[in-house]
Length: 273
Image (cartoon, rainbow, N blue to C red):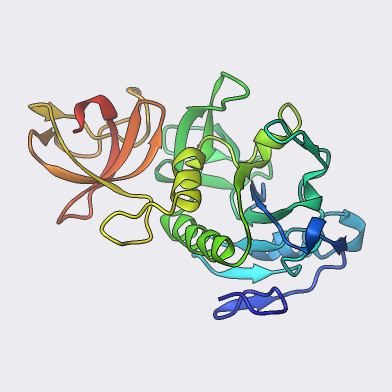
C-alpha cells in the first residue's frame, strides 16, 4: 500500500535522497517513467542517487531480486528525467509530473565470447542473462542484460499500486521522453506489454503477470537462448500442441516457459497460437 505520507509500505527500505525539489504539479503524479541504473548493484545505485554531487535521484530503486528502496516521497519532484519532453501532451521537464523508477540493470553489453558479455564497467555476464536486440531509437542490434522476472513482477505490482493511489495516465520509458539522449530501459524491457498491463489493468487468470498462455502451432519449434536465429537452441524442439506461457516479447520473438517444466527460452512467435 501507499500511505498518506506518499511512501510505499511493507517490505520497503527507506533511504532519503537530498536530490529533490518541491511538490509535483497539482501535488500528484500522473506519469510513471521507467529507467535502468546502468550499474550492477542496488547499493551502487543508492549511493549515486543519494549523493548531493550527483544531482540525480528517483522515487524508487528495484533490485534484481525484487527488493525495493524508496528515496523520495511520491508527491515530491525527484531528479530522474532531466531534459525531457512528452510529445503526446506537449509537456517538457517530466520531473514535474512523474514518478521515476530505477531498475538495477547493466544496459548494453559487449560480446567477448559465446558464453560471456561485458558491461561498460567491466563486469562479465553469462549468456543466459543476455539478449540481442535493436533499440527502437537506434536500429542497430546490440547485446543487453535482461531484466529478471522477479524485478519485472515487483515493478508491475508497484505500478498498479501507484495507479490505484494516483491518477496515472502515462507509463513511459526514459528513452521515449529523451530520445537521442537516453536509451534506458531499452529493448530488454517489455515496455509496450507492461504499459498495457498497468494502464488497462489486464490480468491473465487473475494473476499479476506479464504472461499470456499459448500453444505451439508448428510440428517442431526450436527454442533458443535469445531472440534471434543465431542463438543456440536450449533443448530439443517443442512439438505441436505443447502449451507455453509467454513471459516476454522482442519483435517477432517470444520468450516462453513450457508448462509443467522449468524450460524457458525464445521462439519465433508466428508459430504460437
